Length: 81
Image (cartoon, rainbow, N blue to C red; front, side, top):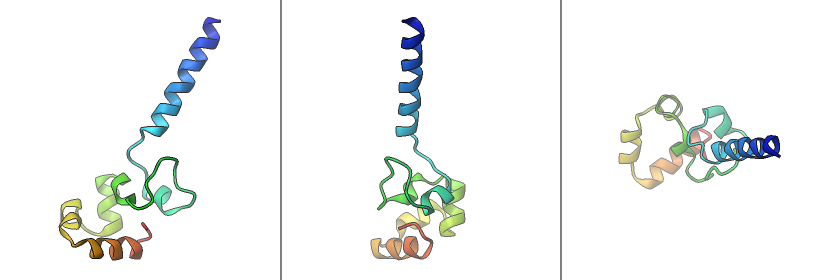
Protein backbone atom coordinates (compact mmCIF):
# COMPACT_ATOMS: atom_id res chain seq x y z
CA UNK A 1 0.00 0.00 0.00
CA UNK A 2 2.86 2.42 0.75
CA UNK A 3 4.18 2.10 -2.81
CA UNK A 4 0.72 2.84 -4.18
CA UNK A 5 0.37 5.92 -1.98
CA UNK A 6 3.82 7.18 -2.96
CA UNK A 7 3.00 6.75 -6.66
CA UNK A 8 -0.25 8.66 -6.21
CA UNK A 9 1.56 11.52 -4.48
CA UNK A 10 4.06 11.78 -7.32
CA UNK A 11 1.23 11.77 -9.85
CA UNK A 12 -0.58 14.58 -8.03
CA UNK A 13 2.65 16.61 -7.85
CA UNK A 14 3.17 16.13 -11.59
CA UNK A 15 -0.36 17.25 -12.37
CA UNK A 16 -0.10 20.26 -10.07
CA UNK A 17 3.23 21.32 -11.57
CA UNK A 18 1.71 21.20 -15.07
CA UNK A 19 -1.39 23.13 -13.97
CA UNK A 20 0.69 25.73 -12.15
CA UNK A 21 3.18 26.27 -14.96
CA UNK A 22 3.36 29.98 -15.58
CA UNK A 23 5.82 30.23 -18.46
CA UNK A 24 5.94 28.51 -21.85
CA UNK A 25 8.31 28.79 -24.80
CA UNK A 26 7.13 30.96 -27.69
CA UNK A 27 6.73 27.92 -29.97
CA UNK A 28 4.32 26.26 -27.51
CA UNK A 29 2.10 29.35 -27.49
CA UNK A 30 2.09 29.72 -31.26
CA UNK A 31 1.07 26.10 -31.88
CA UNK A 32 -2.32 24.47 -31.41
CA UNK A 33 -3.64 22.98 -29.29
CA UNK A 34 -2.40 25.32 -26.57
CA UNK A 35 -1.00 23.89 -23.34
CA UNK A 36 -3.74 23.01 -20.86
CA UNK A 37 -4.86 25.93 -18.71
CA UNK A 38 -3.45 28.69 -20.94
CA UNK A 39 -5.76 31.66 -21.56
CA UNK A 40 -5.83 32.04 -25.36
CA UNK A 41 -6.60 35.75 -25.09
CA UNK A 42 -3.56 36.51 -22.89
CA UNK A 43 -0.77 34.41 -24.43
CA UNK A 44 1.81 37.15 -23.84
CA UNK A 45 1.49 36.60 -20.08
CA UNK A 46 3.02 33.13 -20.38
CA UNK A 47 6.22 34.22 -22.15
CA UNK A 48 9.50 34.65 -20.34
CA UNK A 49 10.87 38.21 -20.49
CA UNK A 50 13.40 37.11 -23.13
CA UNK A 51 10.79 35.38 -25.31
CA UNK A 52 8.44 38.33 -24.85
CA UNK A 53 11.02 40.78 -26.16
CA UNK A 54 11.97 38.46 -29.03
CA UNK A 55 8.36 37.84 -30.06
CA UNK A 56 6.92 41.34 -29.73
CA UNK A 57 10.14 43.28 -30.34
CA UNK A 58 9.70 45.43 -27.24
CA UNK A 59 9.92 45.18 -23.49
CA UNK A 60 6.91 44.20 -21.44
CA UNK A 61 6.65 47.72 -19.98
CA UNK A 62 6.55 49.27 -23.46
CA UNK A 63 3.86 46.82 -24.55
CA UNK A 64 1.72 47.50 -21.47
CA UNK A 65 1.88 51.26 -22.20
CA UNK A 66 0.25 50.72 -25.63
CA UNK A 67 -3.51 51.18 -26.07
CA UNK A 68 -5.47 47.92 -26.01
CA UNK A 69 -6.19 47.93 -29.74
CA UNK A 70 -2.49 48.27 -30.54
CA UNK A 71 -1.68 45.37 -28.21
CA UNK A 72 -4.26 43.18 -29.99
CA UNK A 73 -2.98 44.13 -33.44
CA UNK A 74 0.62 43.45 -32.40
CA UNK A 75 -0.29 40.05 -30.94
CA UNK A 76 -2.17 39.12 -34.13
CA UNK A 77 0.79 40.16 -36.29
CA UNK A 78 3.17 38.05 -34.19
CA UNK A 79 0.96 34.93 -34.03
CA UNK A 80 0.04 35.30 -30.37
CA UNK A 81 -3.73 35.66 -30.71
